[in-house]
Every structure is written in structure tokens, then in C-alpha cells.
Length: 276
Image 1 (cartoon, rainbow, N blue to C red):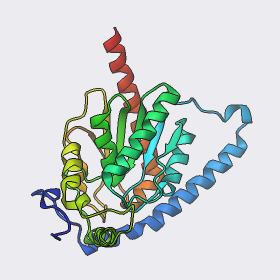
Image 2 (image 1 turned 90 degrees about the vertical axis):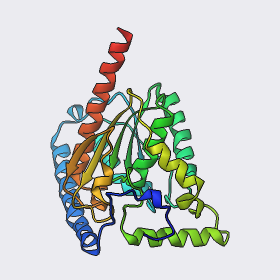
Image 3 (image 1 turned 120 degrees about the vertical axis):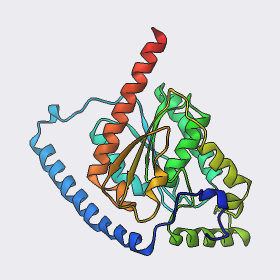
Image 4 (image 1 turned 30 degrees about the vertical axis):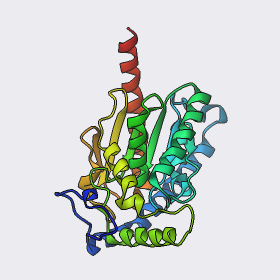
């Protein structure tokens, strides 16, 4: 393992996907094509549906989406659109490129969650792709008053360094840029110092019983070790998609929507029991 990353980020029992696994990411072309076909069918169905019958029941809880490493809100545009079709009110994280300090990104998302919760008068569910899911879990540990549930997609929470070496090279480049004074990029402290340790230890703490979690993973993931994506506190759901495709495959979007509804129902039942 590269010295760039702290050793505790890759516990025993987890590994890095090989080159052959990375080649599986090529299936994102098929997954994007599947999305295009789905979108076309949805538009045709909508045109044939009377205007008065087009509306769907609004989900009670708002949903915030958090992108993965080196990605931005734009990567979850199709996920957001698919969730809105199912009645969810979605919000962006305002992360343009997830390449900075993870703790800073978490603080930004947390502040945004506070604004959404205050505006909507309810807790928020969070959907996170890859690193975005790890950020979501850390916030959920600290702020169960803000977060009612999270859905992670290909998020290696048990071993953040269990990813392909290509990502490690990206981290190294960011560290070098930070060392020469480029602002807003991930420093060495974020991957091997106290910043990394705080993030990792926080992600291992148990969630409050009122916070639900679903971990979506794929054995075809060519970027991270899928075994690191299954958290003991969550409900594991396997899908068939590439790591990148988790954000665009309409089959995964359906699973995310169903998981959010199930989590919302679970939280509602718990609230009813507590107030009874």
C-alpha cells in the first residue's frame, strides 16, 4: 500500500481492486444507455398522461445528495431527477468538486442540512455516492437531530483505502498541489494525519437508533472493494452496476427510491411508538 494513505485506512480482510476489475467500469456506457432508454420511455408516458394525473404523492422528508471523490453535484443530476419523479424533494450539496478536506466538506454539508431541516421542518435523508456516503455517515453520527436516514452507494466505510491505485495517484496529486500552496485541495493531513483519523473513527461509531441506513453495493465495482461497503449498522442491498454506474443506472435509482421510502416508514413507526 502506498505511504500516501494511513495504514489503518486499509484494515486486514480488505484489498484493492485489480486492473481487471477496473476494466469492468466500461459497463457505464451500457448503464448510461439504459438511462437514456428509460428517460425516453418516461417522457412518452408523461405526454400520454393527462396533466391532472401527472402529480405524485410528495414524500414527507427532503433528500440531500452528496457526490463522490473528485466529483460534483452534476454527477448526481440523473439520480435527483429520478427521485423527484418518485415524489422526493431533492437538494444539492453545493460541492462542485469533492477534492478538498473531508472534514471541511462534511461541515459544509452539515450547515446545508441545518438550513434544509429548518426550512422544511423535518429531518433530512442523505444519499451519498462513494466518498459522499462516508461523509453522510459521519454527519449522521454527530447529528441524528438533522439526519433521519442515509443511503450509501459504493461507499467503502469499513476500509476507505480499499480502492484502486488509480485513485491513490489522484490523492497524491492533490497532496502535492496542497503542499505548494494551492487552496481547497486535499492535503496530506487529510489522508494520513489527524484529519483522516477523525473522519475514519467517526465513521465507525454506531448510528443512533432513530437513523436508518441502507448500503448499496455491487460485486462488479471496479473502483472499491465491495466488501468494505457493507456496514454492520445498515441494510445491505446488492445491485449489478459499475462504481460510476451506481449514480446513473435507472435500476439503482429505483433501489435508492425504494430504500428511502422504507427508511421513512421505519422512522415514522419509531416516532409513533415514542409518542404513544
